Length: 171
Image (cartoon, rainbow, N blue to C red; front, side):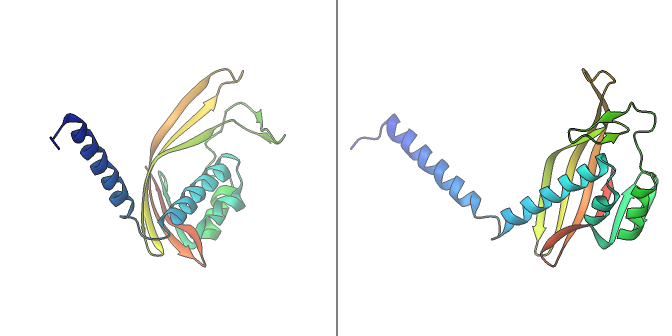
């Protein structure tokens, strides 16, 4: 049988399929579940921050977890709770009031988006680099005001099957 251009396409397709299958084997068993749990943890962190839920915010940190932000470090879950409960991290001062979809009044519609997550899991420890964007609706809610952006460097620890921040560094 003569070698044809159709055979080139068949060989290329087979190689691409093989490469795709081989690529999927580079992650250890359970990686997808761990990654999904870490992505969920980061989302719970952002929601608690945006809705000033000090208890929910502190709950995503290990007991000895560290929050490292522009004004220094806050060490330990209890201190992180106090940090949020006292309004120290109130980035909405002076922003217009808003009502959330569930009917609660909040001082602002400042929200955070998380993008471009690169997560490495190593047993019961993990690290991540994540981009974040902060935005606000203006008073008439018709325009978005892009406020801040940056990245996080995170270290995680799995405690009793639950992923928690051991270090959350905001850049």
